[in-house]
Image (cartoon, helix red, strand yellow):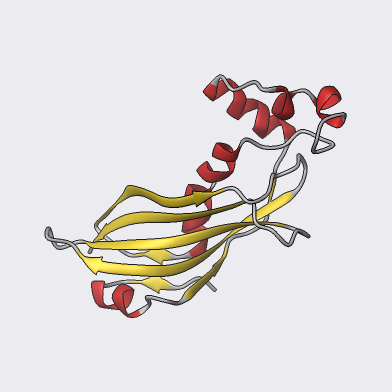
Length: 151
């Protein structure tokens, strides 16, 4: 069950806690192709299954930035913040330790690594999201996301 934060105090008190994980998501070739179209990144390791089969990964792989973008899908599954408004403030320390092969399953696991009250009365929270690949020892992505919540 995902944690629910209903106040500044509850969020501040949870620093250091593991928040839980999202559901598994299958990385389909269709999702990869759609991302390639949206970003004009049609490199063969992403979109050419025949050539990618002969390449270094043995199959198409997801774009690193596609994997990172899915963090915004995983976050609401990892935690709930009851607030008036929230904004994405950015990311720190984004890394891509392992590629995501087509048709593999990924999920996000969150940890609240920092939280502080901002000058305008919000709470700036840093949530480390580790994108795991089912069956892999290495994660696909580790990103420290920064959000501002206003209660």
